[in-house]
Image (cartoon, rainbow, N blue to C red; front, side, top):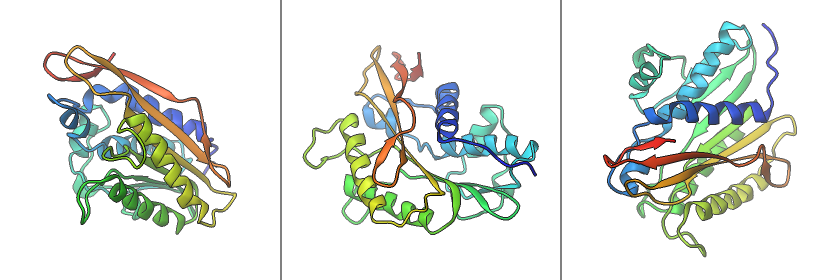
Length: 245
């Protein structure tokens, strides 16, 4: 098996390009902000990127196997729709506890967690979303892997000390994730990547916005950008469909 030689920028660019290429198949549609942005989970889309990429690396004999643990069965329809099917949810890759994982013959190469759960005992809040994210960080920290990736669409409701906008939500989540990571013992051999995604503003028919794709890596003390902030321009049409432009 060949060794896998990837950088943080390769992972960030692969996911952004996948979202950019397939965004119109994400079915973002609805007459209000909640329905078009939060109407469907992004789990199948994020997972599909790393499964399809992993399959290419397997064919090149650069990784040994793929693990996939999913909760959203519509990944089957999505992967077929974008030309990466068939994907039988009843005969998936072996479950390795992470949303998606790549394995060498004897070690874990990549572990991905996509987290956008917001509900808890006190309802759908920023605090509950962060608690779920921290649980995923703990899970990632309990394993040894070359790359550990966390992807999320930050929740937006009553941001502490900030106006409720997605740029502010991304800043708040980045700060809180930094505080969490500072309390962990993280090996210098591991590369942590955090990707936070959110629209720049709300939309009405015939309006445009940009979806922010903010990407960071851990440098022992804080999260620093992997690459320049990436943006995907989208527009809502008169049928309330949000499409890439």
